[in-house]
Length: 119
Image 1 (cartoon, one colour):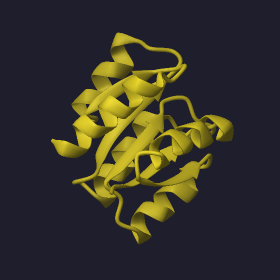
Image 2 (cartoon, helix red, strand yellow):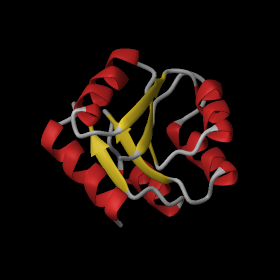
Image 3 (cartoon, one colour):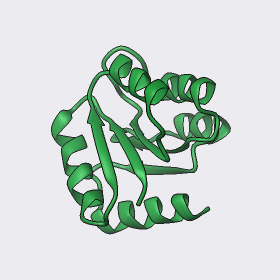
Image 4 (cartoon, one colour):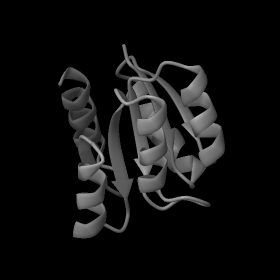
């Protein structure tokens, strides 16, 4: 199945997403540091990145911009516990395929991941 990375400043949130998606057969790497995430993407093929908007040093939008420079073809789903029209617009403008609001709904996450991967 797909190679997926998850970047969330709360490691437990990333681990929860990993458990959900691994049950669907995906390989999932979880990160809580922006630099580690970007290094991983430079060195590994990744089909989908799931990025939290609120991070420690950068925003998820800034990480998305960097990912686009490294691997323009990568598919992206943004996560946030603080949805705003502005961040949704920025994310979609930079090519994010979907936007999920925390707390994560298992079925919604599974559906959006499958839709983005099959697009």
